[in-house]
Length: 469
View 1 (cartoon, rainbow, N blue to C red):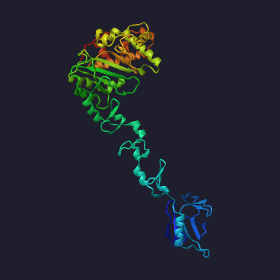
View 2 (cartoon, rainbow, N blue to C red; view 1 turned 180 degrees about the vertical axis):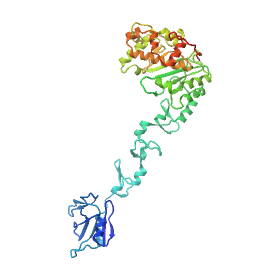
View 3 (cartoon, rainbow, N blue to C red; view 1 turned 90 degrees about the horizontal axis):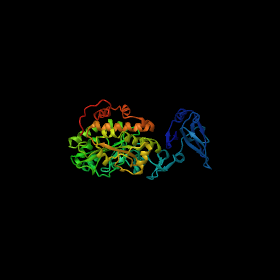
View 4 (tube, rainbow, N blue to C red; view 1 turned 180 degrees about the horizontal axis):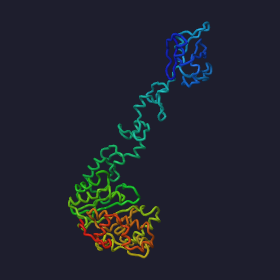
């Protein structure tokens, strides 16, 4: 017996069966039910319990006049002839096979890209379009970062690493020189221009020393809210790009930590400037020991040159969470420098004449706020003060002489860290009552203690110094 077999999500197809009850039950996966929804003498044989047992929806049955859907057949079914003059089902004639193949044909839709017809389930909706598998594959990709599908034309990454615009903006850069895709964490910046590591070193080798006004976007390193940016001046072996490149190769081997700048106060040198870093980062991640050793090997000095300073910038936000809190702590910092000027002068390795020229004092006053008011008044040496407040985002400490001795450099940062702690956590009265020796009790870092002993600033425990460079 020839019947028209209709399965879910498949086109109708003619099938030969032996006409037995078993062959019919096998096709519909269970007990059979015959319904007669057509004007033609045609029976629709389906599973009697299709809906009850949860078989998948197959085809709708529509009213012949209104075309409204009044039922849905669940599970596979078949059509056969049901002559009115016979009690048996018979083969479906060819003309009815052709007719009902069209009636139960799967609805087709057009791919909005290529225009070809496809079954509904073959098309994928995307961005207001219906795309066939080929167009979907050829014209879209998944963002390798967020796994969102995007148009291939909107891919701002690479063929190997496709990216949507949002993920690129949040996590990636393009190398200014070679246009390579770089993760933000692996990017080296020269000013605001991003570079891959290879191109960064190549560009820095050609032009390692920037002009005096060069100021890149700061990159903050380390966890915390107190950051130290160091300007270390070195002199005596030339304002030489090749020499600067050698130092930068060490400093920036893993991340862009430093850059070099011209400084008109130097005879034959330049200054090494770090991005802002926490004290812990300076101690454990910034390769200061190798940098100062390389500078000495190249013929530079700092302390002995007589022209060099060691300037340290600290972010204003480190002094407090509000402008008033910052002002109060900065006022106590200025008071500390005035109260302990003689000790800090000794610590700085400067002469009073040098400080008068490059890092003048504001002058002692009875109250911290009075010194801050004087500093803000502008009736002083401007930025050439021991604690320079003219920068919008940082407080600059300028009174220290340059050094290529690692312990001295680190001790300077540690001293400033202790001073800022005292300025934040002590009251005005506490600070006015504090002695230098009691302040020393809070200085526990080994590099700082060693240097204080070398400078005869640590009570009763002088040691011999190894000499400054």
